[in-house]
Structures are given as structure tokens and as C-alpha cells.
Image (cartoon, rainbow, N blue to C red; front, side, top):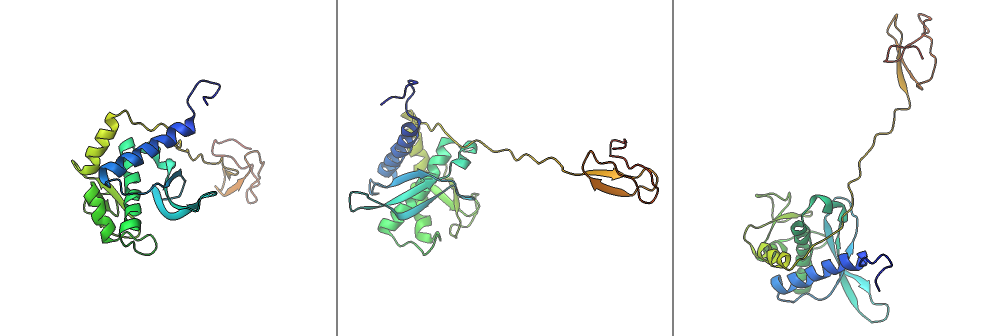
Length: 215
């Protein structure tokens, strides 16, 4: 059903984009070996995404499926290629859960790192060349001319695009609730509300604001 404004449904458009990317990379980089899972958008501090095994249970079918979550708060500063590299990063965790031996917790071990390299992503603890390949919290970067980059170029050539991200939130400072007052005679300072009328206890003179006027 098309909405009354004639536009295609936003949720369907964006999530179908992630689904098509998953299907494409599954075929190109994992030989179609990964089972279906649920892709979600989740905001988690200090994380571009995460993989959670057996996160969802069927309400009607006796089925347990995995989850890949992507954090839209980082999308604004990332290209579609970089967002897809995060998806493939988590798909490597999915592959290891099915066919390898994941470490306990969220530790990224050598088996996972080797798979990342095999699909064209270089694991790095700081996302830069020369970074550690394994660790608790890991990033990566795209290998120039590697399998992922070539696969993404094929995907982009089909017209693939992502459309939405979280807007960057500007942190506005709250206005100061107190203003500095100074005695023009002895330079003693005091702080009070901007409309306060202060008298210096030493000189008995009206204290002034930084603008040089008495309150």
C-alpha cells in the first residue's frame, strides 16, 4: 500500500536496502552460506554496529535467528560503502558463529580477523593501518582493491543507495545562571544573578558587571 502522499514507505525503502546489501554480500563474499537474520537500527554508544546470536524467536514458528544491528548515529559522517563495510564486519561474526569458534564475550580473535581479511576488510583496533588485528573492541578499514571493495562497486553499479541517517546533535551550552560582579574600588569579586544589585561589603560601593555598569 502506497501512503497518501504518493511517496514510497520510508521504512520499507531503507530496510529493504539493507536486506539487499546483506543478500548481495552473502552471495559475493560468503558463497551464500549465511542464514537469514534480522537487521535492525540500534543506537549504542561507541559502536558502529554489533552482532547478537540467537536474539529473536519466532512468534509462530519454532525458529531462533541472529541479529545484526547498525548504529545510524554514525551514518552522517560515513559513505554508503563504509556503512556496508560495517554490515560485512558483522556478517563475519555471523559466519564465525555458524562455522568457526568465536571467543567468549565480544573478543575478536584471529579466526575472525583472518575471515575479515579474506573478504577484503583489514581488522584494526583503531581503524588505521598498523593497528592490532585482534582485541575486545575492533574497527577495520577497506583493503584497496580487495574483495569487499570490488563487490561494493558491483552493488553500487546496480543503483544501490541508503537514504537516512541520524542528524548530528549540536550541544548547546546552557546560559550562565550567574554573573560575575566586581567592586571598582578593591576589585573584590562576587557571583549572582544578572539582575542582582550588589554592594561591596568592604568599600560599600555598588559592584559592577563585566560590562562596567552597576546592576
